[in-house]
Image (cartoon, rainbow, N blue to C red; front, side, top):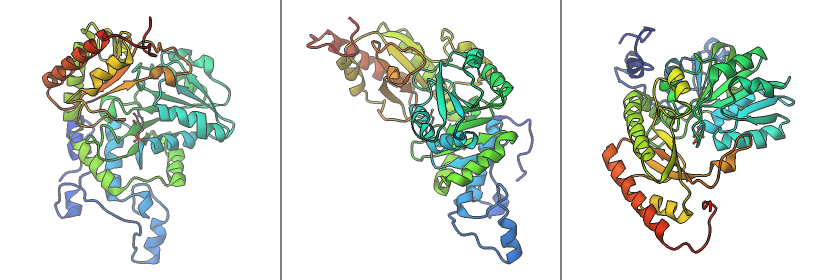
Length: 409
Ligand SMILES: Cc1ncc(COP(=O)(O)O)c(C=O)c1O
């Protein structure tokens, strides 16, 4: 099989051919799962050569096996980065990316709408290590310059934001960061490596919770850090220091997930938009948070910087008692409830963005939901939601005994 070296190949083709090497594996289509800690060498010279720890070469299990290297190569290439590192979870990948560039006395700027546990890292572990932080408004754009301190070393972005889905002007942020010698790290999980290339927008490092769309089947935990050439050394060191390597079985599942990423995302993105449009027309809905909707404030940035939309978005309901929201959610048949997304199955959960914000306002009177569109037929999903809104309205009409945090009046 010819090696996929043609730079002009489309992403769908690359997803199908990258990381495969049948000649090296008895003709087997997929790179097999290599379980390994010890790697044996035939002589001292070979042992010493491997000890130089060349990236992408076997040395010791923690540094990867051919299964891991195949995944890393595939993600790096699709996301437009230089190299990629596989970690045991998305959170481990985020920590590694941050620790690669921050030390005691440094300052971190983190977007206010970052994934909750990323914010917790800034407030907890990094603070204890003497690294200060400022959360910034996701809509700040080039005004981020006003928050830069002489010791700001990293700007951590996530676009669109977790729960609230604001788009960030990455090129404007990167220009300010680079002008001051700081690095830009982007959590690119929503778009996956396929729909956003953060390096073309000025990011130095991209983080993926591969647990989501890359694995795609809700059955493995995995994180990826992809870097540009200048950021390789620091992240390689963090990868080495942390020892939070990914297991080979999970890398195999992720590589298998990559093969179908384009078809899954295309369908899930379409279904997500269809649900978003339907929800936007509901009288109970105040606002839909989806950057690929034309009337969304993030639409211009999304259409400039992204090549597609995944299936995750938010909904802001008009004020209703909490029991009405619970009635909607509890009876759903096709939407599961769980603290994740990115699999083939649809999900719906209540969210509380006002609890995870420091630098931007969010009105707690309006109940929020987060939806994830899976691979089910959109009409079945809409029918399920339709029944959900009937339950909401019925519960709303029932006599209210006490006020809830959700009730505005
Ligand atoms: C945007 C985002 N980044 C990172 C993570 C963390 O990934 P993991 O759960 O694999 O640690 C998540 C998990 O939900 C996420 O939603």
